[in-house]
Image (cartoon, rainbow, N blue to C red; front, side, top):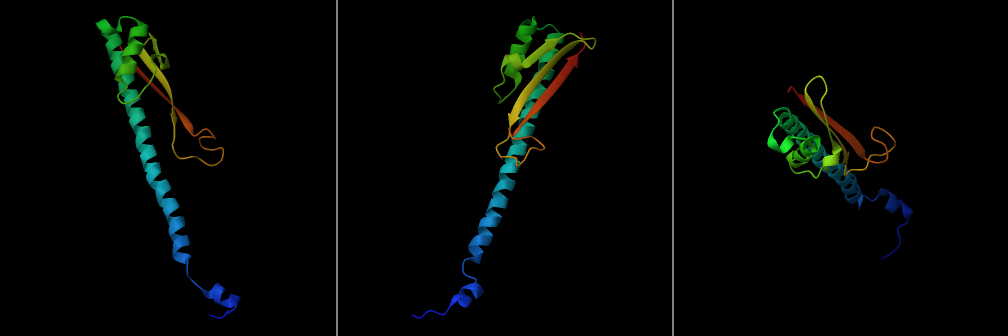
Length: 135
């Protein structure tokens, strides 16, 4: 076999499909994992909303498991289905609206976010939920 020169390599299209496939694969994988991350975020948000609602209701009707603020916070932690949220993340208070339960939870994304915005280099977002029931 003899050498044909560099002009043959410039006109050759061999390997271009592999390069295109690699670029598209990265974009598709980021999209799919991003959908999963969004689903996880909605799951956590809904779980925390349910936990504070159930705990505020439990405290407002003075149920046996919610007689004190500490018991109500522990009850709230058990109501966050599928999540491991410590009872210390919940705050129980009695403002003018009745019996209030707050939670602050840090959610960490799987996909790294480039740059400093919108979430910063930590890939985390703070979720805060509040529920208040009259006594």
